[in-house]
Image 1 (cartoon, one colour):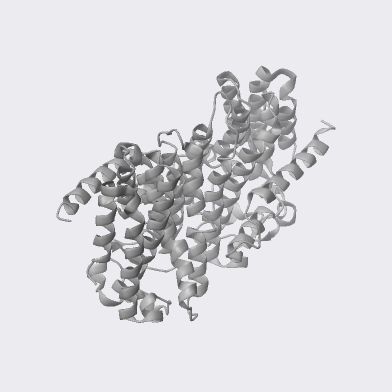
Image 2: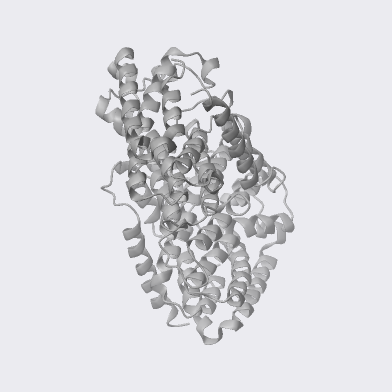
Length: 294
Length: 294
């Protein structure tokens, strides 16, 4: 575990530098939109999705350079959804990653366009992923479009929007987080694996891994929203309760939520057996996420 | 010219039926978003972009069935941009294609998500285009992502947003319309041609055709906004003037705008010579657009 942090830092740096190359420069016209795109992308995210993508490529014996395009694409997908999710007509949040949200800085219309531009760029970038024997651009695009679309990521936002103020049960909550969080984490791992020409069996293992890790991640996020301060989170703490949003701690209680996170993490870890020692990074990441301060 | 209208009707029907197949059904969960996506797509648009795509495929000797996926993708790209453009934080319009705009029916947050979902679907659908000898999914995705992105379509919206209330010259206006209108019309034709394995020379000719046709189309649209009623347009008439938007009639005057539309149409038509008699439909469409009631 000791060598995880330097590895994470090295990979974050690689991802940031690749994002810098893939995105249009700030001086590209019209400058406002390119400034706004970079403002949200370089706001200091953890790059969890790209990291999973690179670690999955490694687990499948691939070259992580080939996984940089899908890695960046997953980060853009995530960031666009945050920019739109923070809009006044959606979650109406002023703070993200410790900084004012996009619409606070650039105005609401520009924030809509910035999200649109980041989403479009997802596909321009994923199309740069080298084809392997088993997978090509068609498969990469289908994978991320399905996950980003109305049945998964956006569908989850819809359920979230429609669920506000309602009393949801655990089943409803799981449905929202499968779609909003677990789907993109799963696809991040799968895309990395695909860029490494993974066998269908390994891809399947990563699907189980990503699904359970994604749910665990969301449970922990919900716990942190209750137990941490705004400063520690970099986004408004206690927001879920304030808007009467159903969360794991609200539905299950804090202690049961912690147990649920541990149970899901264990399930994620056991899916990694097929990778043997090559799955080490994925395992470390899963443990690391579980042990975040909470 | 007599046989254009029945051909247009037949193609519109083909496109509508393909859109119905490509899009998730209304009963797909969560139902609200799929209802909202279909509400905007089946609001009775002219399907100009898909029609250009199919006509360009025909002009290149291709099978129009192979061009249905890119044709639908261009319509989705266009519709998503309208849904977001109509938002209160953007153009703030209540009426589109003769019906209440998406946010008026489904609420603002849902309209943001609906646009996002349509945009994501653009790429899911374009990935279904059969590869030819010269072009594959990588090229199709790159083509439409560049056109839809921050340097073209979205860039045009940004210039438009930033230009409101300012006095723009003809040069600024051309820049906005190149990006906002001409780029997607050009790409529509190019994608149809690519699905028909067009030679680089023919692709180049369609680029010139689309560019000039697109600008002509926008000049005519601006004229119609002045001369037609809301009922005839299906969207709020006189809107441009009301929000003090720079338009061709405002900048050049009505008569000079008409001449400009004719001049651009002529340039578009002369680019078609390379197609010989196979360019007939494209020629008819260009003439038809110029002669719209205005």
